[in-house]
Length: 85
Image (tube, rainbow, N blue to C red; front, side, top):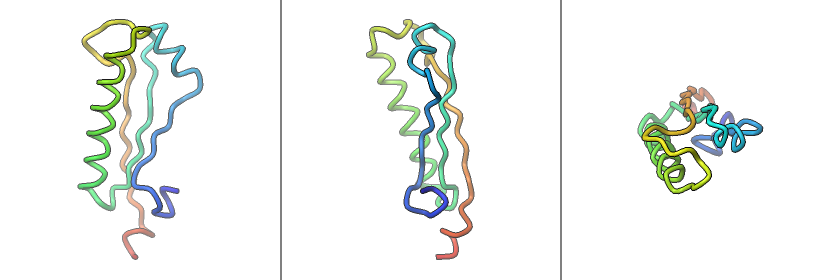
């Protein structure tokens, strides 16, 4: 969907993510954004980081820590097909 231009960003959550977070393993979540539009991709990356930080603060089953219990790995991809349209 990202390659076709129908979405500007996608979030990939690995298998057993919740269990890894609850065990304190600090798993990584991948946020892929279409860098053809840097404003939209930057906004998507910032908003996803803010959303997941707030969500994890309110989850009683997540270890209490000032840092997020997982890593967000941003990946900006340049979508050539979208830039040509």
